[in-house]
Image 1 (tube, each protein chain N blue to C red):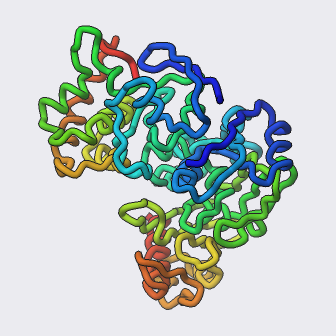
Image 2: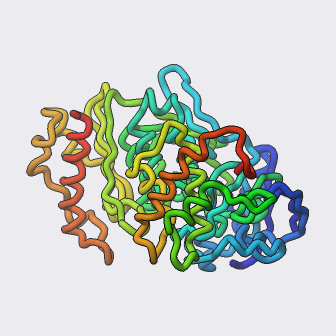
Image 3: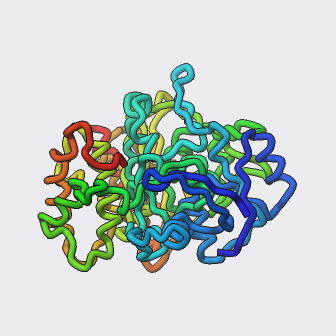
Length: 265
Length: 165
């Protein structure tokens, strides 16, 4: 690792000021992606601004919604009674990210800000139109994700919380790469008051996307059978040593049907 | 360089470290606690697992400065002063849950955390899921799973006759 300075601000203003004034400064959330990247010398920040002292780890119910602080860990989300009761699919999603030790450190804000195309949360966040709250504004999920590792966040802008409107029913199923545990394909399916929602991660060339053809099919009939024959565009799929685009396109259909089945069970 | 003060195996420690120093390198280097191992150094194998503020973490994916003010327990902090092994260590020995031993300290630290968070009991499937972050290339895991199941009842009695993790 190249060396860097380290600060742990006590106020959001102090942290964002340092980040806004120095393009080489990087925020540090749980570090489960950033530190491995730094160890490979793929990045050389001037300073790491540790967000652990900003009281951003919380989960609260606010008028039928769930607000989750950006520094809340995957393990905390998986274990929170509020999440288990109001939005069990999110608890299950969080409880299957990485491994136990990664879940003890990794955070929802860090994952969203990184926007890894194989990360799990974006599927749920995009499908449900969750709101990403920052120190400056509220960003709708549809505007937040802007392609591989790219988001609407500006320099000096930090996620402070994510606000979900829990769906009526939902399920997230992932086909995990057996070594990395990242999603080869992950599909989040929900039944909401405004219709069916399908978010797909791990598969798209441009990262997470909503599968509108599947949503329309599920709005007609919320059954696994309704998804038979609903095409997933191969040209939109990513391809790597783990699977071709055709393989991923097929897998999206298989995993989506499993998710619908899980909701019905 | 950043100043650091934390508690390691119930002992207060103060040090000056480079910001980039990983917790595992701090433990193994200046503190000489070489029971915590570096296996893959890519946060996959779990040989470096320690307890940080009561939670198992991969110390190769945590900066030493992030542990400032915290409580760290390593494999060296488990046995009682008279040498009596922690029940998890004792059951690993009893059930032949190690062969070469390289993964063992991380396995034991993960296993203790797993048992602590499941006072209601642990199924074999839960134990196997809970060990996702720890790789063993010798045992085939079977005896590790048996050892953890055997340690669970021994860890339910209070007060603990060994260092609390």
